Length: 173
Picture: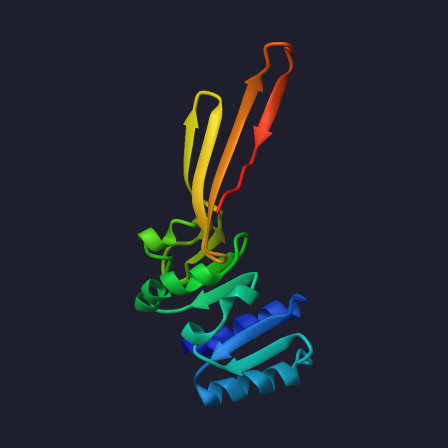
C-alpha cells in the first residue's frame, strides 16, 4: 500500500510539471509505476528505479517526499543528512523524530496531525545561534560538504565616522 502511494506521489508531481524520481524495491510496483507513467504520457517527466533509499545518493535531490512507517522515519534521520542545505523534505503520515541528527531540519508547516498528516521541513545551515547585544553568532556544520560554518553578524561604529559598518558572514572550515 505504501509503495503504491509513493508512486502516485511521483506521478502527481510530474502532472504539476516537475521532473520526478521514484525509488522502489518491489518489482511489480516498479513495473506498475512505469506503466502508469507511460499511460498518462508522463514518461518524459518521471523515472522509476529499483533502488533501496538507504543506498541511493540523496545529494542530487532538491525535494524528497517520504511516505513511510514510524520506524522508517527514525532510520532515515542519518540518511537525509546527505541532502544539501536548502533542500525540502515532505513526510507523510509520520513526522521526523526529534533527535540530535535532525537539528538541521526546520519544520516549516504541518497539515493535519493524524493518519493523513503531512510535515514540510527545510534543511537549514546553522545548528546554534547566539544573540549577544548587537552581535549574532551562528555555529553549524554543512553535512553535505563536511565543513564547519561560523557566521558573525555585527554592526561596528568607527570612532572617526558616525555611520555603522556592517561585518557579515565569515565562513570557516
